[in-house]
Image (cartoon, rainbow, N blue to C red; front, side):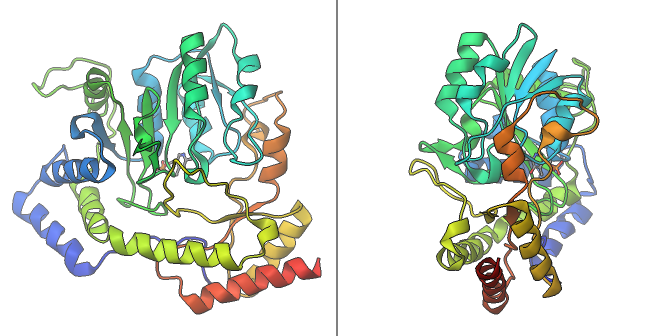
Length: 362
Ligand SMILES: *Cc1c(COP(=O)(O)O)cnc(C)c1O
């Protein structure tokens, strides 16, 4: 079976090199030397300040810490077209999500639909840069300022993406990212939080380790969200091979873009942003066609996933009464095609042929 995504395994020698360091230091966690090295190297790679980048155990905890550190209450406005964690993290922290429908082109929250959703209980906007497409950050910034709202960007899909000449993480009050095994860059499980505000970064760092500061004083309410040395070792080994990962992804992404029927391409690129080729979503005409493409692929041993389905305003535990027609429609007909280093050309051409053939027959 060809999966939609296969976790990248760095060379065993490289991983062993870092694991050997753990055996030498005997430090397994609590911000050990590999955690520090990964923080520095990621900050350098992402072009952000290492003091303001906090590595954590996963991308969901990154969102929860971001929410907690800003003392958010009441309602938050977020995207219904996302992985469930961007909403469930907010609900878990006691917030009520209000869903803003998405733009049919960039698939992010349609900023002109935000104002009617703002109430006296709204404390923040939690937009998602879906598939690495960056939101309309200047509109969002303006709305946040006018209405005194905080902004947390879920930048889980944005590893290495630059927006208007800066790291995508530089926008909003806080950005969070996931380093889950299926993401472009991974630490098996992991994530990070970035904020330009150094005081806030210190607070979040303390909160991620039981509220204990660098002088061993308990200064805040905290939780355990630390990234371990073993996870950092995997991150360093993957980071060493990032060039290979990215060029493989770019080659695959471009081959899809050139060969998949142009009637179903759905990512709109912005000139001011770079691309990280993390996903290759296609938009079918309707759900029936999507299901038939998915079925035909499966019969040939290919797994294509419905990222992101269902549209989150339909979550059973939410009783959201807001309707999001674009998100609902698009979630019913978007499919992500397999994209990972190691997918070979013959396999990819087979996938393209099945997709194109199915489209001709329906
Ligand atoms: C992967 C992902 C998360 C969750 O990250 P984990 O590291 O799996 O906890 C959150 N939001 C989005 C948009 C994601 O894709």
